[in-house]
Length: 538
Image (cartoon, rainbow, N blue to C red; front, side, top):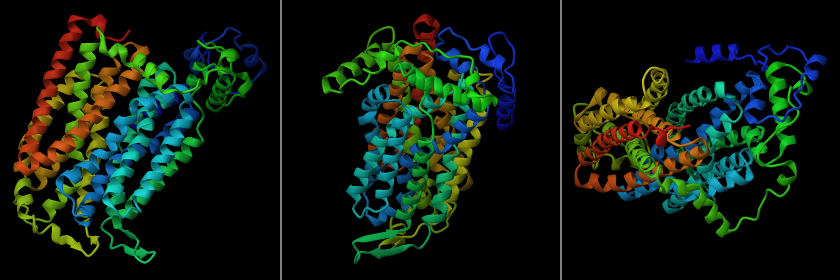
């Protein structure tokens, strides 16, 4: 797939409307060809070409996407250490996992309003910067409830960048490359599933424990891990700071001169021509340059509520009510199954490894045999963690990264709905037998389940985007992701309760949600066949 991407880049030489290639050097003829007719965004971006600038954007995007996963997944990697450090109950473990997603859900609509009002690049920068600050402070806390609060704020901070990242990236590409690049970006971002456990492997098992300020500030292994994660987030913030504002947003608010400068910069870096030879000098959008001076209205609570209602109202009315509700439910169940299982994997591996090396024990038998042994791993204020936990997590992450690229290839030949059905059935079957597995089978099923459910999450978001008109897609994606996050919170609260009743019950519950997702997608497919004009994109 990477070779294919390179070939696409080599072949993507920009053409003028008359079909002639742009020259490699800026000449007087280039300037004479500048079009006096006002151009819309698609026309303007199509004349910028495809080259160095676009490749740089894709490279910068990779650390940007790591931010969200580092914020949401770090609790799962530190849990084997903090579980006995704070003497956590199963419900407290669930609250640590769910705090990030509660923050995301509670701030989703606020971010949506700010994105439309303040733009893309600034909010990405400040959101990521705040996320890095919260992650850094999480590495210094000495009380569990403070850690939960900071993870909640981290969820609030990362909600906007998570939802905005794909949109921001896509607005620097023309129609020919847009969908492909966003898909490739999703594949590259899945590398975070490998990188974060790799960092945890080197840091958390280390015997780090020193005290400052007469013991009021303790720095140990899991805290160093969180601080290291924050450094990577700060790096992403710096890279975003060097990016240009989205030209599409600049046009949308009437800042045409700034948008034109961005187009010229993209054109110059992609083609090697001077910026003044860019063949467009007038842009056209719904708002004029003069109106843009008044485009920053005062933000009031009543105006925010009215604007929010206008944005979400179509989803509560036909013809969108039924298909959108089913899609919201679908991602609710899909993200519930994925993240409830994924976030608990390191702790589950810790329990299995602590089972005195008896690899013949199944997942649930290992948990029963280590009720005392695992807790005894604490030594004073330091919880020593076996590095094998993170080796297994890296194997799972590698499976996610690899299967994402396989899925990209498969979607060229198979409908996304059918692919979701296959993965739902496979996921339901694998998680159903998971409690009774051991050894390499346990690890294999873990990797397969996380990989296919991660792909299913992307498929549902794509299905939602294609089920509504273009004008509603931005809000549709935000809403469906919000319901998916609600599913994560719900799952991390109920699974610990079910786990106290029976070890097998949580896995059977996840299997039930997998098979239920299979039924929901069948209903959606039937609706699409009966009313193609209602739930298909124009």
